[in-house]
Length: 417
Image 1 (tube, rainbow, N blue to C red):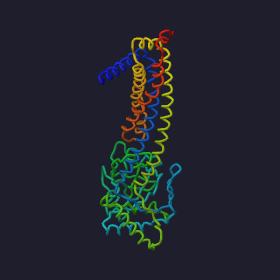
Image 2 (cartoon, helix red, strand yellow):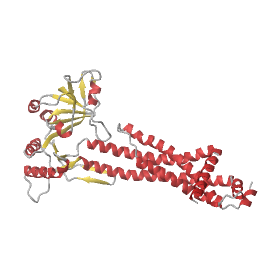
Image 3 (tube, rainbow, N blue to C red):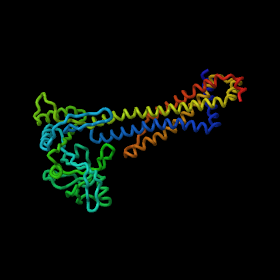
């Protein structure tokens, strides 16, 4: 009995393929309707996955075992939700250095830095960069804490840091603009008119719409403080936990040390802010998840329109093939066989449309990966979802036309012209 049912199923599929070949143009156009809906669904969800991957990769470079003590008071606003921090007093250079030294005595490596400029222009002879270079003042621990690597030359020495010498380390994007054919190490540059000698080039870390790690100029902490610091400057202390598993203990130790430096009483709130890279990352990813839901709804609506079109085309096919259906039933075809044949046609069209839609959806979605200069994403769960959706679209769209075909009276169907 089971073999008989399998034979009937295979025969129904075979006849469905023959019917689609006979109406090839209609089948292709119908499949393209489904492909359009799947392209919209997969493309939007893939683009969201690309953005999530880009954010995760960028924040991962900061390190899972690092955190920051800095001045609060800034607002992160994403959509309707956001994090608003209470305005806090600045963290002067002396306070940040004292915190760093105290933490070193407790076995925690820390680095003091300051974002001096975000719209600097760097010049070398007759060449200059765009006015979007970021300039940071950093100490000798900065590379170890922040995972910064040198590709050419070296980083600042202890003497250069202590004496505040006019030296600089450049990121790759600046080097490409100012030194396209020669080495930058040993050359003289001017940052907003102030002279510096290049002693090192950092390795590329990658840029995104959220961070620009390759368009930075680094100065020794005292040099930057002397040349571009101001009374309102607030310094940031990045702290490296020896192990990601004990980062909470490290954070508590850092908070205790900073409170002691600030002379805060037991009942007083912290007048500084603790931030982990994954906190901001989770905020952005949460926002993207909402965008992903919206994208999925748009794709589903598009698919709904495609399924209605498929149902309409299948109904037209039933009407046009009334005589054929009557002949099959007169020769002994059962209602179930007719249903299976028309369902098989609808499902085959939907699956073919699904393959086409997934292909173009991945191309559309990963176009964003090339725009963000990040890795290509193959969201297997969305690809699987697309094929599942295609299958059910075929069933839903083909069921009513199939039942209508199966219920046709064979005598009346044979008379139909």
